[in-house]
Image (cartoon, rainbow, N blue to C red; front, side, top):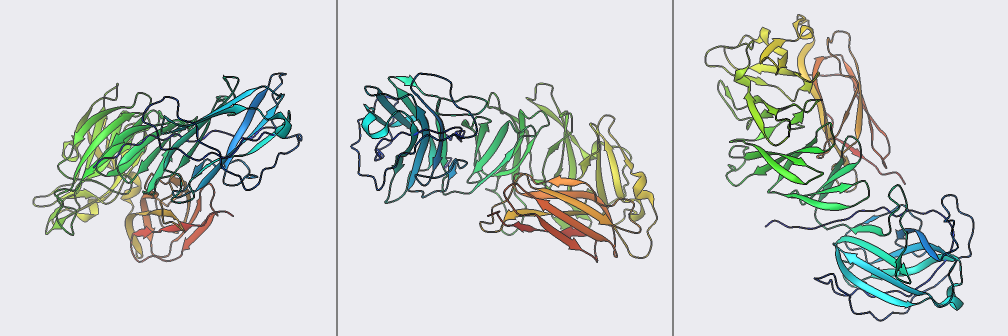
Length: 494
């Protein structure tokens, strides 16, 4: 059953010194409409402390009016800023902000929202005798000490005499504070090429899109999100939704995939293609640099005698990104062929430019193996030609064309790390196409260097980096086949 949630993420950051203090609130049941919520009685707090104003590097409001500003959330009263997402089961979260120019007689109101619905409201006079004119508010929190706070997107708005306060910071100068209690279900995400958007997948079924201000909205609810990939324009997203209802036990036969394009600005979804089998490979469908074409492997991979269920498929995308024309492998001229045989891609290929896709081919049975190797598929004229680097004759120790690939995960949770960068250095005496450059992991934490030529004495070094994790180096000095699968676990920085 499909689940729908709405989440908002974060933007509240620190900026200057001051102090204020209201009592801890007990969470009320979530409301179903955005109307005033009955006030909740305050509870005793374990410790209350106000902090004298001290200079803080950053923004200080230049005003004589009373003001709240520079808010952040933390798990402790004296917690520093920087965290805006908390794990499922979190029992208490503090909202901490600065204030100045306060005076007796002011009315303070705060509103908590959960998943866009008013959840809790409190209004009371400013206690000048207790808090004074300047300070840092440190003892406002919401909590549930029994089962933990509900998962969802939280937002706090605060008012002085009904004037909403600029407690947020950053480019948008937000008048609210956002944070998230993550659901217990699995989560993965990946940023757009320009880092203005991020995609979050929950439970392998529900996709949320989040803008640079932390605002999140539901984008799509499917059966199983198998692949995600951004277009270079950072506003369109490729999504593969997988149906396993007819899958045969222990095999990939019977899987059916749908290919969608999502416009993340309008949140409109467009179905491009309904496959009678599955998209395959490490990365799945990938758009060309200009976004006009899409390339992917398709098929279950099942093989029997001289048959292999694997092929290339391309799509020509309409200028409005609302439809696409499928172009299957057999439409290309220039491929090697023979009766009762199949030519198929060995692994994912790479876009060389806007119209040329490089991929390694192999064949079954009667196909002349000497004609196999790297081929360039030109989608503008539907021709395929053997890559010049693939024409070199084999010598003793050559293992042929293959790939370097793997999955990058968190060493503790096992969750895939999207956006990790693997840099490849390949030392070889004979290879016409050594592995080099870098590859970024997709939403599944997978990276891939395709069309690599292996010799048995080669050395391959991978250096993997990801934000918030320790750098990892992997080296292999000898090969017995034309494939290297290096799955790597990264350790978080302290």
